[in-house]
Image (tube, rainbow, N blue to C red; front, side, top):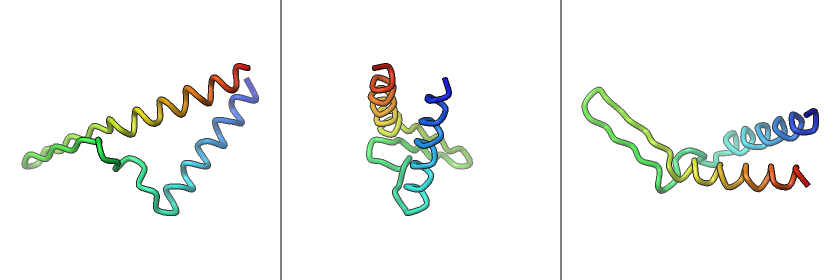
Length: 64
């Protein structure tokens, strides 16, 4: 459990550094934004798929 928490913290730190240096996480092609008057709907489809693949790979490596 401790190892998983340390790895999760490192992943979150790495993602934060990428955002700080200008990588547009969350604004990828394939992310949908609908604006109608005062209503805005944002659905991060591509970002969700990439995050899912990366987390699946990370967790499969940790289970070994």
